[in-house]
Length: 146
Image (cartoon, rainbow, N blue to C red; front, side, top):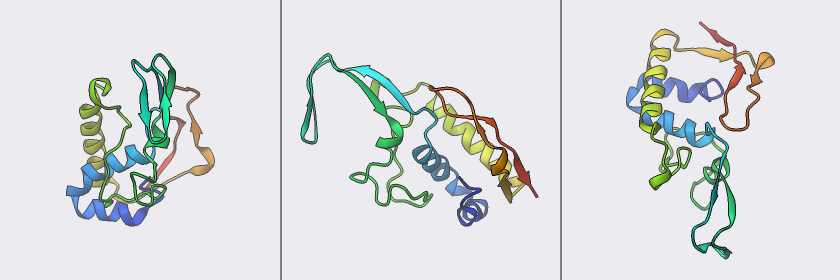
């Protein structure tokens, strides 16, 4: 995301207090896992719809993280947005046990990347997503550093 938004990359390079916000906005904007399946234990009322108990549901994190009822301008990547909370790692008892570790790894990796190579770009012609339906990632991602 920061390759596509060099102005925000400069901001976090100059102000490392933005590392946490940058990692969370990246997770909101491009969640690592696209969905998770669940069964409802009881009737669930959401907006003007009722999902009956025992229903199979598929929660789409990417859609939830861009809900315009929750986020102002949800399709814009903005590390300074007022409300960055997201559902990428789930919520409550179903929250990913590794969520805090993943955020820490993201902050450390981004901090080190900015220390060594404050400017970079992506070779978009060679991008290739990994062939998986559970976790999003890259099969091939060439980064051009300077």
